[in-house]
Amino acid sequence: MLFHEQPTDPWNQYDFKLLEAFQILKDETCPQCGNPVWLCHSDSPNVAFKAWETVCHATKEMLRREDAKKPRKERASKDEKAEWGKTTSMIAYKPEYADGEMPTRREYYESLG
Image 1 (cartoon, helix red, strand yellow):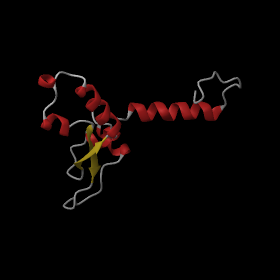
Image 2 (cartoon, one colour; image 1 turned 90 degrees about the horizontal axis):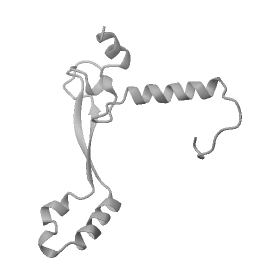
Image 3 (cartoon, helix red, strand yellow; image 1 turned 180 degrees about the vertical axis):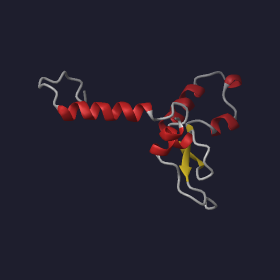
Image 4 (spheres, helix red, strand yellow; image 1 turned 90 degrees about the vertical axis):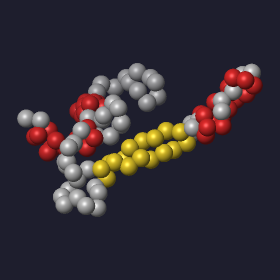
């Protein structure tokens, strides 16, 4: 899989365990925010989120080049250009006022019934 070649050796128990672990990780990652579901779906007061903003300079340059090809009247405004390449992610953390620990994976699944 890593080298885009069909493996020739038969799978062993670790191959299957790795595949299962990857599937669990995928299933337990929120499709909207990318955080673990037991944190972003939690109602616990011990979980808060802060925004983390990054800039992909390659995307920013690509958008700048595409914009430069447009007629002057259709080019992006200064405000629009300021947003090029930006991505905001939300990061879970335990707030200072929290009186307990952040919820665990086990607690989340137990709360589902």
